[in-house]
Image (cartoon, rainbow, N blue to C red; front, side, top):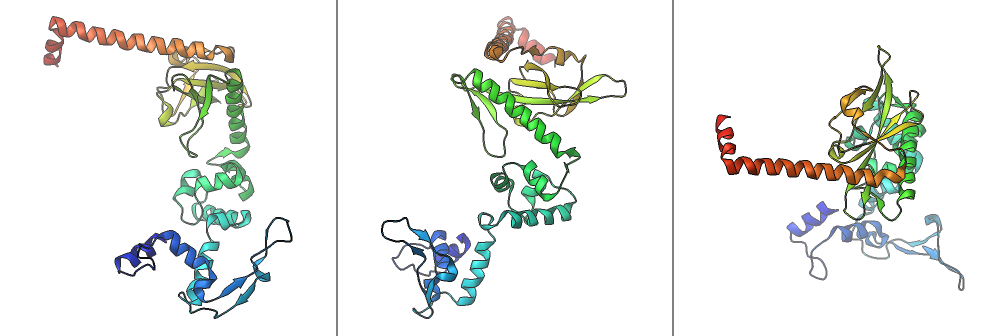
Length: 312
């Protein structure tokens, strides 16, 4: 629509009232049969004081050649086919068929593949229609996504949502859910300061030496935020314990139980202790930053700072 409007404006085709052509105007003309020369009656119906109802198209009264057409019948009908293919006009089954075509082409489905494909609607539309990608995977006929059972992903998502809900019930006036967009995960936001708190579940894996390990995969945008980590049990069916960290120094790794960083996490025995722990972590971070700043200031005042830079 925007392309047609730009072309009409660039070619100097005047709009009736002297203004420029707009995409909304083009869309209205291509959707209204009057511009094809057809007069239509009876799109809606109402009886006395009852609410107005929409009448099915096959019951409309039409008079062809009622006006001089601006758009040919062929172009108008082709436009209707294009409009019917828009995502919001597709039925659930039609959308699933498009996703099956993407699955056949790539051999698997993921949010990244769906978002890049021109054969189906984007991830945001699919989530809006089916609730989440896992629901869509199940209806397409997939039992796994990227090697992970769909039932497991759904269970982990449920565990995370339940944890968030539990924390919000504990702090209804202090915390709220924050989300940058539909493509981003929900975070907790401290209303007083605006601080964002990440929620991360770490799945349990067994190594050859039978030592407990947890798989960490924090989103890039959340690694430097205070994080509540839920360590899952051996069967990955429930949260075994909660730890709070100032940040997550890893991108994608398996962490053993005896890992020094893992042991530095502050246990969250009760959700009611969360804000106190967050304040303590923030206080330690500010104190560390202040100490570093004062150390640099002392070096500068004694002249050692310049000599240390020069030796480098």
